[in-house]
Amino acid sequence: MLYFVKSRPERKVVTMELKDGFGRKIEYLRISVTDRCDLRCSYCMPKGYRQFEEPEHWLNFGEIARLVNIFAGCGLKRVRLTGGEPLLRKNLPELARRISDTPGIEDLSLSTNATLLASQAKDLKEAGVDRLNISLDSLDRERIRRLTGRDVLERILQGIDAAREAGFSLIKINMVAISGANDFEIEEMVKFCMERGLVLRLIETMPMGETGRSQGFLDLQPVKNRLAEKYGLVPALMPGGGPARYLRTADGAFSLGFITPISQHFCETCNRVRLSVDGSLHLCLGQEDRFDFRQLLRGGASDEEILSALHVAISKKPERHEFREAPGKLVRFMSATGG
Image (cartoon, rainbow, N blue to C red):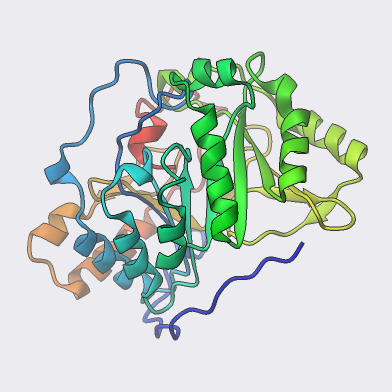
């Protein structure tokens, strides 16, 4: 299977690369455009949660585009739009186009639960989104209802079909593997993705907030070994720049990724930071270190001042998370950080 990334505007001249205190080059920014979601996935957001950011605290599209432009001047190559559920943000294709047109940005992707994707897939593709990550934790309607709190399987499948029809260069299905909840469905999901030319990624649960710690953890290393033997999978590389480790079939027709922050962490190669909807730059998914850029953006700071603050912030990026050593450390939820 061949994957193509479309040409981008001419590369911006890099003023000074973003490197943290451990020599890791930061080239990947994940931007949460909203902390709202139409689902209540059991590992992400607790039932009854209402502590959302007020819309006036959200970075507007101009502020986001300005930050991306400053980042791009330091070597940023990849941007992912996330949430919450990003498709809840009004006029999202407008932001996608502004980011896609930024010199230096080579790859723009989107993470979504796909419940709203059927009506937006074409516009997002035309706006410059190259790739999609779609959350799908089960193929059983009742199990999806229990995991997400909503009866939405049919809408998700319609969204996947619309994305395939729109012609995205790559569509990845993200399945959070939960012991006792959906682990017995993994091989069925493999077959589903094989038949549709989709990449499957299996993800270990992370102990973020009580929601994350309450899930049945599944070590994916034995799963990886079992599937590799059954399908004759071999190591592979995949566009995206994220943390997944991939295998593929010998003919290259199917790829399977594993995101294993607990059983085999990937901190030594971490190249990313996360910008939450309120302008906080989270430097590590498993730590509380962050920097407030909203105050600078709305306080009249120049691009040079923001650039200086950005380098200071990146220099404070922690070496690694402590999910295994201190699983109760984080109190914030995944939805409040951005995917």
